[in-house]
Length: 456
Image (cartoon, rainbow, N blue to C red):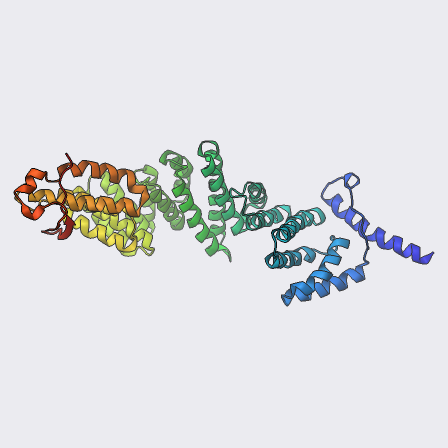
């Protein structure tokens, strides 16, 4: 009789504990179907198995850990949260060691179930359900690569970010934007608003994490720059939307140099440097402390006012203070553009080539160099003067070969300037221009090209 009573108590204790945990979560325990347990362990046995499996996990002996962990997990998953944190490591190891697709599928399904049961059995104020959903979303992206859009992960990541707010994991914030971007790319008309909202939410949270300071500051700054780049490359936003998002932020952040610099960089990447919001950010930042971003903003404002000398001075100041190669390349390109606008084509080529040293495949620079060549006055002879169009088209062809985003503009320029190639009749009187032969265009251009006759 005592033995029977002992067994009943062993069963009753863990079930009572389970019921208490579910009651905390406000769920109806009676509605849940509980799978039969083959063996119910008492607390002492659970503690022993937990200790053994945990020590094996610490020693990275996951095969040894699995037997004790599995027995504990199947019997008393509600015993201790360590069952789930250790379980993640054990099952990840098992998945990596699996030899067949069937085995890998088995382990990854267990990993997903592990997250669900952690939510089911534990109310942890420090690591609430939203936190675990973030872990589940990130793991889903790892273990289910065949879901190229990550649509199932999206729901977990979204709930995690909304639930955790400024306490969200940096990785979860980044992954939400990445997945939202992939979904947006699959149907831009349908998902542009969703992607914009997700970006805004994550960007604001990352800014808040940076402002709060602490151990996550550097990581948040790095990921804010990353999601800004992704947003800028997406094509989902226009300058008007940017102004709606950031006009009040710029006003409120008039004394926050980091925030102003971040906003200016994003505006520049999106090509929204004609915006009054961008100029306001630049002016405020430059008053606080001149930086490469604020100097560039003031330079763009000078261009809008028609002050090209002032613009050159500001952009050269921005170049001196720039740290990242991407920024140096952009400022050099803009300086080259200013020189072209005042018809100093030789200096335009000099600065465009310097930009290419930092960004060798930037098609914009090759297009600009080609335009400078096409505008050059090298020869008095009207036939020889047309040789500049050969080197110009060489640059346009190089632009589209290296940078597909420039292909449309490059083809238009090639179509335009190839019409000015010397005709076959012109070449007849200049034997050095015979089609297919090598020719060196002189003067400050000093480039070798191939002679081509205009197509009739």
